[in-house]
Length: 280
Image (cartoon, rainbow, N blue to C red; front, top):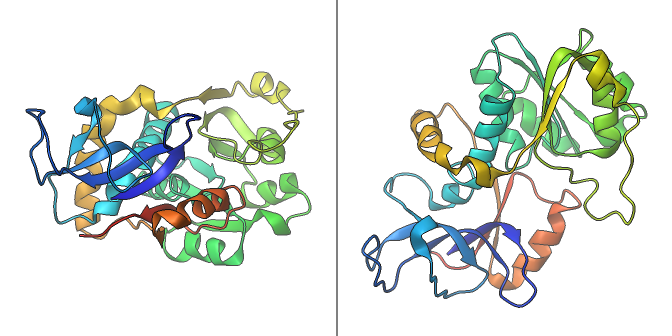
């Protein structure tokens, strides 16, 4: 069983997207021995009372962990945010923050496949190199080394940004708003810099939404589950042909899951964070 992106609950085990093997079933859709992906718990054995939302894994030539990431929630998030909300056109300039994470690495590669110019930001030299050398970003920078994010963005986007895939919030979002092009699009996927602040940072440059007629839209992946077939149709051939890269950061054992979760908020992980509870 493998877990990714976790959600917490006060009275029950923490749950999240995972891959599991069916040991017994009374549901007509699932049989003993089936492999499934979907919402499971942080535990070695789970009793799933409402399995209708689970997906039976059919493609056995794909790493099982991919069903928690590129073929799971991260994949649908990237697909929906980029294609449905940002509506890319060939030649668009695209900026992705937290670009080496589970979602960002996919958005950047989707953008390159769409004929866009793509720049990503990350928090270490290792991650910046990953963006350029493994994921094919045109440029990338370490935001921690930039004294002025506005100047940094203007350096990489002298003519402005058409699409911003937002994963960070705060000072990064403020700087991006100054550098957007007229009729730019912003998909607000997350704001990792703000989640643990006692007082979230305010945004000062919202006037640019009006002046540049920018469309900025937040979204939740639960509203786009119907796009899983579209994602599979597009991504499975790319995986098999080696035309898309997906990097995972895997730790073994349930005991290591809390530390892996906490590490997400400080950028400790490189790529999609996965916890392997058991292996076939």
